[in-house]
Length: 113
Image 1 (cartoon, one colour):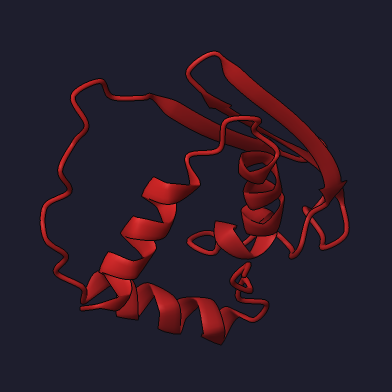
Image 2 (cartoon, rainbow, N blue to C red):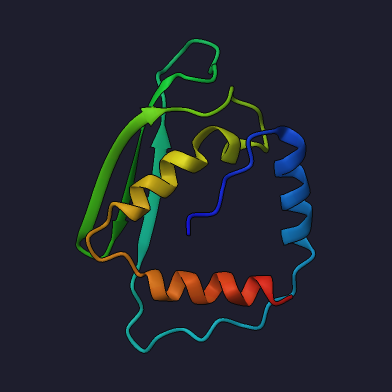
């Protein structure tokens, strides 16, 4: 099941406050760590409105993926997840070797607090 991303400022701020209050157990790093990253952007200039075209990329080890789509919200400092969260998630899910087991384990751990 894919969690839904917050669509409104108050939803994201509530989620950010909830996450800030969590005190999860330390994560046990694997013997051979896997490094990854994500990046998203939209057009230069303009006023950064919802619906702007955007693209996101994800990489994990030698695996990489790029997706395009619409940005979800206008630009607002501190609220980047509203603008690019869905696009970043699509990029990560497009990886051929998505480390879902680790991501699901981390999500379960976070919810248990």
